[in-house]
Each structure stands twice: as C-alpha cells, then as structure tokens.
Amino acid sequence: MTDILDVLVVGGGPVGACAAALLVRGCEGGAGRVAVLEPKRPRLPPSESPIDPRVVAISRASERILDAAGAWSLVSGLSMDGCGVRAARLCPYERMRVWHESVAPDSPGTLVFDAADVGEPNLGYIVESRVLQAALLDAFSDAGGSIEAAHLQALHVRADCVNVETSGGPLAARLVIGADGAQSAVRQAVGLSVEVSDYRQTAIVATVATERPHAGTAWQRFMRNGTLAFLPLADGTSSIVWSADNEVAGELLAAPAVDFAVELDKASALALGATRLVSERASVPLRRLAAHHYVAQRIALLGDAAHVVHPLAGQGVNLGMLDSAALAQLLLAARGEREDPGALRVLRRYERWRKSEVALMGAAIEAFDRFLAHGSGPLSRLAQQGLGWVNRSQQIKRLFIQRALGVTGELPLAARRGS
Ligand SMILES: Cc1cc2nc3c(=O)[nH]c(=O)nc-3n(C[C@H](O)[C@H](O)[C@H](O)COP(=O)(O)OP(=O)(O)OC[C@H]3O[C@@H](n4cnc5c(N)ncnc54)[C@H](O)[C@@H]3O)c2cc1C
Image (cartoon, rainbow, N blue to C red; front, side):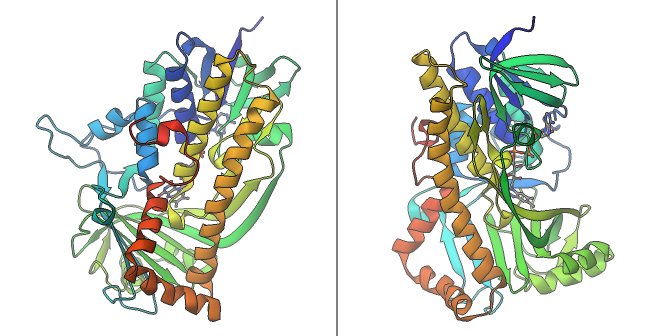
C-alpha cells in the first residue's frame, strides 16, 4: 500500500517549486509529507556559462517570497564573487521607460518610473527562468522534500485521498497541487474548465548586444501591432521580448540575423542604439487563459495552470509566486487546526483570495494590450497621451510603481516587508 502524502505538487516549475519549498519550510517535521513530481529538473548553471535568453522580471514581492522559501540566497549568491562584487547573472533594474510609437523615446511623452521616486534601491531583478526553478527545487530538497523525476499519467480523486499514476509508479496524496503549466494535465484530468483567448500574437525572445548601455533600465515600446521590451542583463546585453502579430512574427523569425536586427532597430526607434543578435531566437504563441475554478475536492491549481496573462507586463511568475505563498499560508494554518489539506472549505479560501487579485491584474494587462499595443480609436489616443500625463504626476506614478513592485493588494505574509 502506497504511503499517503499530505501534498503532492505536480510540476516543479518556478511556481510549483515555490509552493513546495514554502510548505516544507513551514511545517516542522513534515518535510517527508510533501513531494514534487517534475520530469525535467534543471541545475543551477555554472557562473561562467552564457545567460539563457528565457529570463523573467521578478518583483519585490517575489523576492521576499523567494527569501521565505529559502531560495533567494541561491539566486542572488550566483551574482556575487568572493569579494561580494556583482558578477554576470542576476540584474537589478532601477528604472523603466515606457513609450508609444507616436512619440520619441526621449520625449516628455515617455513614462519614466524610477525606484528612487519611492525610496527603493531597484524595481526588481531580471533572472533566468532556469535559475529561479533550480534554486527553488534545491531549496525544497535541502529542506528534506523529495522530488520524483516522473510525469503524471492519471489521477483518481477518492473520498480520503487522490491516487496518482505516474511514469515512475503510483503515489497517493490528500491534496494534489496542479502547477504543471498552461497545458495542465491535472486540470484536464479533473475537468476544471478554462476560458482561452488567442491574442494572434507570437512573442520572440532573444539576447541582443546594444550600441548604448542599458543603464539598468527596462525599456518598453507600445506599437500599433505589438510591444517590444528590452530587459537589462548583468553582462551588459539585453533580453528582448517582442510580441508581434503572428504574420509579422513569422517573417521576423525567418529573416537572417542581420535583417532581423535592422527590423529591431526600427521597432525600438534606436532607443539603445543599433542592436546585434547574440543568441538564437525563440518563440512562444500567446494566449490568455483563465480557469473558471482554481480548486476542486483535493485539487488546487497554481500559476500558469490556473491563469496565463500576456507577457507585456512581466507578471506571470509574479502572480504565480503570490498564489504559492497564499496557498502555503492557508494550508499551514489549516495544519495547525488539524484540518484536512484537501478539504474544499480550506481550498475555497485560496480560490476566493487569489482569483480576485489575478482578475484585477489581468484586466489591467488587457487594457494595456487593447489600447496601447493595438488600438487606434479615441480611447487608444487618450491612453497614449495618458503615458505623458501619468509621467507628470508623482502621486499617480508612485501608485504604478507600487503595483509593479507587487506590494499592493491583499498580500500573503511571505510577500510583506520584514515578514
Ligand atoms: C515571452 C515570455 C516572457 C515572460 N516574462 C515574464 C516576466 O518578465 N515576469 C513574469 O513574472 N512572468 C513572465 N512570463 C510568464 C512566465 O514565464 C510564466 O508565468 C511561468 O513560467 C509560469 O510558471 P509555472 O511554474 O506556473 O509553469 P511552467 O513554467 O510552465 O512550469 C510547469 C512545470 O510543470 C512540469 N510538467 C508539465 N506537465 C507535467 C506532467 N504531466 N507531470 C509532471 N510535471 C509536469 C513542466 O516540466 C514544468 O517544469 C513570461 C512568459 C513569456 C511567454
């Protein structure tokens, strides 16, 4: 007979690994009761290896959650050499410059967010996805958690537990957390329905060298047919995320590197001078996804398994980390009350909490895409001018910066200052 785990996390991506690490660190003597099912475990890369083009911008809230999960020292430790000098891996960014193609990048119509305006050292960090994931899985296993290198094949929800069939053998748990990404097998196995809309856009991701230094700044240009972001990397190069209509993206991906750089220079209005590709181009088709319910009896969905948002605001992982911290907090409280972690009444608290927060952020991102990245009507013109107006109001700018730092809304304890 298989031992029954308290929690099985299916998918050890950054979000699932984060939930698992928080749970294991929060429950004394309970490490053996939490396991992660993850077929592709990355390792922390050697410090001299090139930076992977798949990077994410993480917020202050995520930094605090990573710290609570025991992973921040592993992520940030990579950026320090023996003398405490930053080396080429993790990049803090101090400013953001956001502008519409109807104005020049250095015009007063450009919205500039500066960490100094809110007394912060930076607005967040750019970090490789694989580093985030590897550090969180290491923090989980260092705290005694076990990682099964297998994938989910089927699951059956029973009255007292979930029986799980995996490529590595059977498992059973009182709660199964589905953190297995946008195509979640957990979500599909239990029939949790989703609303999906196709943006008809593809994100092109690559690393580029630029003529002028990025100056610790994230740059974002809204255009009539998409958005282009430059995220600063610690070795002086920048990671681009160019979300373009599918047809345009197809041509950009097929173009020789030199021609691609010419198009990139036009799209960036040479904000950082001329560019040169220094990595392969990767592409991701963009879809929005929202699960109608995040929970069912003995099941909870986290991160991209529950919601996928447009990458223009760089919020996917950040929302997922907040999901992880909220669920872990509620499960640890339930454990203190000797409640069953799979009980629907416990899980519904999580759903009520996070669904409304995600919906707020999702609506803001949709508005940016509709009015700034695509629209051409009066509302779009208003939104475009709005960037300049916001730029002139310190008070409104501060509100936006707090949002970007992820320190507003109903925060889990792990995301709060000094927790
Ligand atoms: C171009 C682009 C740029 C982005 N930039 C940002 C950014 O700047 N900031 C930000 O916050 N977000 C960003 N995002 C979003 C972010 O990448 C995702 O939200 C994030 O990766 C979701 O993490 P996750 O752990 O939920 O899912 P995933 O990263 O998809 O991980 C799922 C895990 O589940 C495992 N898995 C899958 N199926 C199974 C199975 N059957 N059994 C067991 N395991 C399984 C997989 O191996 C994987 O490890 C960006 C996204 C894109 C496309």
